[in-house]
Image (cartoon, rainbow, N blue to C red):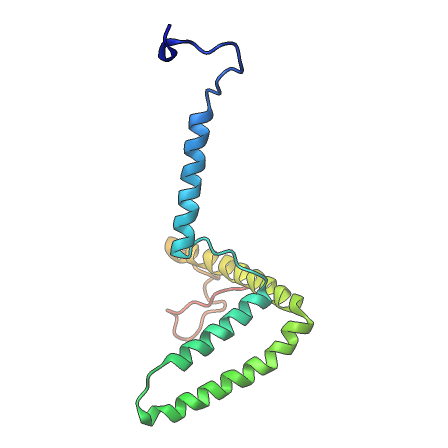
Length: 150
């Protein structure tokens, strides 16, 4: 027999899923590359790091504005305010970075509570149900309703 027609000898059985795994790995790598190229693969850091990045980005954007001479004085004032805010926030970030994580968590909880209250009220509006019993809690206008956050 020639080499091209010989059968492999006894050895490990070929992996039947190898091609499928290789394709899946290639696809995952390509998707990760595309996410990174488009900025979607960004993993946020701590709240303190994100605040620092925000302040730096705002500072860069304000400095990059090309304004007419009359508005340059205002731009200088804005840059000074940003520099003062950064100087005030930087020490807090350095000493207590977890404070910003707690503030971010508290903000998330407040937003969830607000959404729950508004969602319930919106459901009433779409079903045309009164928010309160007639004659109770209605303003003189009659047409406006108050969102009950209780």
